[in-house]
Image (cartoon, rainbow, N blue to C red; front, side, top):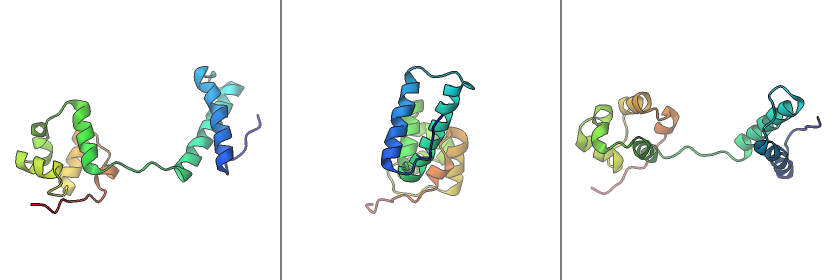
Length: 126
């Protein structure tokens, strides 16, 4: 099993080619091929986390995405955020999320807190 650290973009591409062969016919865990697959995946994930990080989504877009996923309307967010006009202010970027709102959105809708606590752009239009 000849595996080495991924140091360059060409190493990364070679590792992706190696690991992609296993996706069509995933090896048995604990077998030599299964161990190779797990190690290659760990190396690829570590390299991607360092060199190709994925930014967290905008907090309001994350809320809208979760609403779309769960088939929620702004009215459904009243118990989580507050009165309906407050929900619209949040969704239209007229008002920032409060810590209590962030906690409720995380706890009740499962939106990651680290996504919700990011700075958000507030619209200047009244």
